[in-house]
Length: 342
Image (cartoon, rainbow, N blue to C red; front, side, top):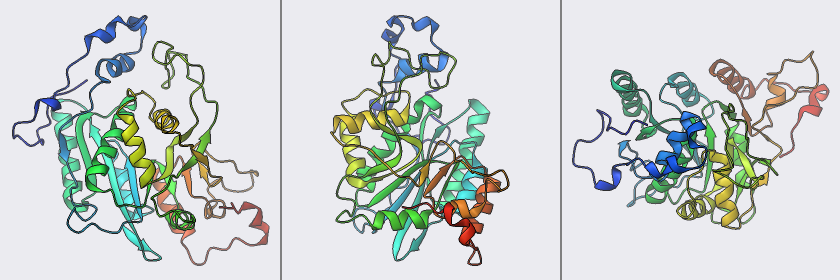
């Protein structure tokens, strides 16, 4: 795992806590030599939670002196190389705007990728994006699938320091399609909850189990997780949570070792906090089903009432956003069965 500082990192002396030393004791775990390299790497460094920030947004939420009243913060997990995805999101559902007088703001959270010149080029790209859009948080850790949990925890730490007043958050990947108008309507309709009470909802997974097949990207051996069932959790493609729940998860994360599957880790923190995740029929993180081959699977009448769907590529994302926001879109009586109740 690359731990050297990026060329774009502030060159002022860093505190000792930013250095991440490999934990060689991990190699003593039974069967360690047979684990995939990405899992070995995770176990060597799972204790490390302090990394230099390359790109920061200290005033994104208005700053300490004059905090901005943000209703929904879009927290989007992205990869340094996904420039096209970020650009499309900025033009579609992740626009910074107000809806019914409620402010929506956007943040992309990233680590670093590559080595030497490749890493430097990607960091320069992100710096240019950041200067133009003011929407990127980046830390100097390697952006891999098993480090998504680290990315989540680092963001929550940043939120506690810089953005505690936000009401709700959408936490999702950069390849989900989100109908932010519907999301705001749903969250604003929660009775007696302005973000100060528990809310964590998405595509609920009950009785999920660790994958023991070592060729799966989700492989977790019994030496890392002994139980045969995961706590209830919501699919990591996209879910919604209140500021209360986000801060509770962060407080409990200090007592729970990082886990290689980030959405399961959220479930672990919720379980320890005695807070339950909930299901929403309008969230589809495992894809969607169209009941007829005679209808386009991207028919906007199927999507106009959803909250969030995974997985979309940039061209379909751009088209769908404009279609569902077209005032001339007609989904008549023949399409009534497509409506998703929220």
